[in-house]
Length: 214
Ligand SMILES: Nc1ncnc2c1ncn2[C@@H]1O[C@H](COP(=O)(O)OP(=O)(O)OP(=O)(O)O)[C@@H](O)[C@H]1O
Ligand SMILES: O=C(O)c1ccc[n+]([C@@H]2O[C@H](COP(=O)([O-])O)[C@@H](O)[C@H]2O)c1
Image (cartoon, rainbow, N blue to C red; front, top):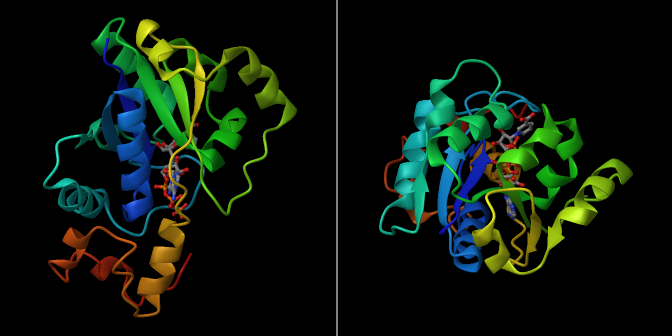
């Protein structure tokens, strides 16, 4: 069965790193990929842009293609956007369909600090996206959990609903939303780090211009 992959993030703002790795993951896994903005990201400072502004940027970014779509379910939930709550809900909805949680290597390395992290494997596979320029060392606790789950054949994920971990060799792009916010705060124009649709209306990137960084 064609897997459903979820790529959660703050997307403050969405950048070409997000889009490129999500696109390549969709190709490698033959999966439907949904970008899923968090309402209140659990482990970080509050986003600069509001949920409505981040959704508007995602919509502009996703225009003109059908491979990547938007899932706004976490924005309808109050409180921290714990992924386990989202996966429980998706599992109810999707029956036995394979679910894949896509995580950049940095987010994956932090998995043991997530709410009910071991339960995530009951509901989804995890696809780890390589990401250059970050510290993504695995703790012993994470390695012990992952080693028996590791697979290299993406087709295997189509035959099971959850529980495996696959590392996806996507094209490494050293782009981060932090860097984009820094450039915008300095009054610069990170035109080729962001999807071009974000430059159509000057109001779209206004939340970041001249803003002191948190
Ligand atoms: N360039 C990239 N390559 C691979 N994965 C990425 C890349 N940028 C972001 N991700 C992944 O996308 C998900 C959402 O990330 P997020 O929206 O926090 O973007 P970010 O660029 O890491 O933002 P910030 O710099 O504000 O922390 C995370 O799993 C993160 O690891
Ligand atoms: O469930 C958790 O405890 C948890 C802790 C940290 C991050 N997450 C999710 O991981 C995704 C990436 O987070 P971030 O902070 O890198 O944008 C996003 O969907 C968050 O909701 C989830």
